[in-house]
Image (cartoon, rainbow, N blue to C red; front, side, top):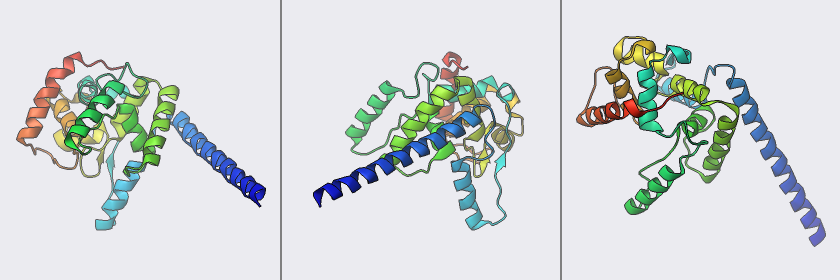
Length: 232
């Protein structure tokens, strides 16, 4: 009886490992495809659209893909300066930032600070839900490594700038620039780019022309950091 139990246990474990391998292969194939082709929809975009349609069945997303060279260098520097200053140097994870965030969260007694890199944020946007489970964090790490291996830094930043949220149903640099400033992504000024970067943590909080003392302060800080930001 015990031998039979062990046999079935190992079969279940083997099947689970095969299933896990197939899931990772599915992620890798999609990442490889998107290294050469532009994603039309991400998991996060799909989730947001679904929630918007609960209130308005006719809701649509504002999104227009633009190539890397048609995005203002000011926005590239602003995003790197505020979201991932070591973007060009790390392999997907900023371990120093992770350690600092951990120490600060321990002091606060709750999770307040994060240390996600641009690559990690892209992994979440492309594939994952917003759940804070150990499984999801582990999968995020695996996808992040795949992204860093399969894509170069320029492509990672290009996709990131085209899929992150910048307003209620507003996704990507082009839609954001037109929604907030009435200009193309290529024509964003340094102050405009810094303000867009400052909005990233709470993108649906600010509409066109809206501001707060906090947003202005953060915009000024990002402007000061932008000249030192290195972009691919």
